[in-house]
Image 1: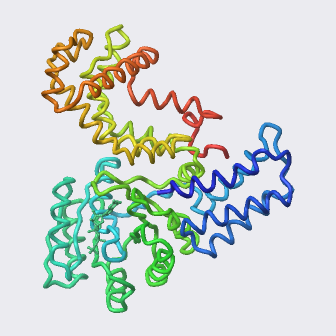
Image 2 (image 1 turned 60 degrees about the horizontal axis):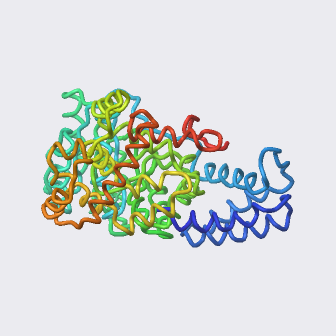
Length: 459
Ligand SMILES: Nc1nc2c(ncn2[C@@H]2O[C@H](COP(=O)(O)OP(=O)(O)OP(=O)(O)O)[C@@H](O)[C@H]2O)c(=O)[nH]1
């Protein structure tokens, strides 16, 4: 989401890096560029102004620490201010109340409310071991209720049936009463979408809010709507006592402005980012990590957490044992690793979180790495178990058989074998451990050891 912004900001900050001192003039020049970069990323004008002014105030007359050059010092200020802009700490959901804790979802049509209900319920179930019940109070779009039912089944949470001839308040109250009886911890209420700010529907959701008194009222907003995000967020914030925001479609090519503006204009924290269409594509929002990502410093913490969530621990351990006993990293293992990368959203999404890899990530996405992964998978699948264990036995005729079987060329197979050799060497060096360890290693290489530090990076 932040690719362009990252690129523009890095460019503008580069000019100040070479300077011996931070002066009024070079600060002014750099800030002009920063301002342009933010506006281009669709950050609201008022927010840009406040932000630039805050950075300027902090930068002017600052004592440059001996260990940092002026550019780094300036970067540190920009990072701290970005964090400030997006809210200090990650504010998770407040579910501490007599169960069930009621969560109300609000937002425009198509913002991703229903999908977010499913993602959130899965998140609460898997990460916080909560018993979740979901219900749809969208009586206008009959397919909406069915959509929620399908998603609830997919993520394995309880669905409370409703129908379009009921009243939204009755539906929500019945669901809450049912949840109490069933000892559910959380009830998530999905609501009807609005095409735009529509008085009748706004009144309806206000009434619903009053009747069920949710502990969390989450506003779901699509990052792709750019500058409009601010007006929409403001309108919802005035109508409802929002407690937080879910910013969806952060995986798309949105320019990132919404992420930077909504907190400032509503005063409400972004609590989650939607990063894909699948039900597991939800990330808790950490302003400090996002600030690092925007500044091209990567987000290793999120990557490591994600790896720990998705990587099959048993398999990783088996691999570690195998490699540490001096047995090779074979093609079967390579296939497992590729699979795990795919599960983590593919190489592009992983690279995006690595420091300085933003551009490479874009290239990887453009080159459609998933196609290459599929091709590698097809090649390995066309080998016999013996060949996978010991690729050195691959003679010319075996290679021909494999490429015929997988619909690939000899060059593709040779490339795969070369990549496998390289990975195998790397694994030996790390004595197994696969991706989690590889990323830990990367974290350790960061200036200041970001991987080992609590989120916060440079502060
Ligand atoms: N890429 C991407 N797509 C998303 C994300 N969240 C939702 N979507 C997609 O956005 C579309 C709309 O999502 P819904 O959940 O149906 O939206 P809604 O707000 O419930 O819409 P209404 O029920 O009509 O109000 C669907 O195609 C989703 O798959 C996300 O984080 N990333």
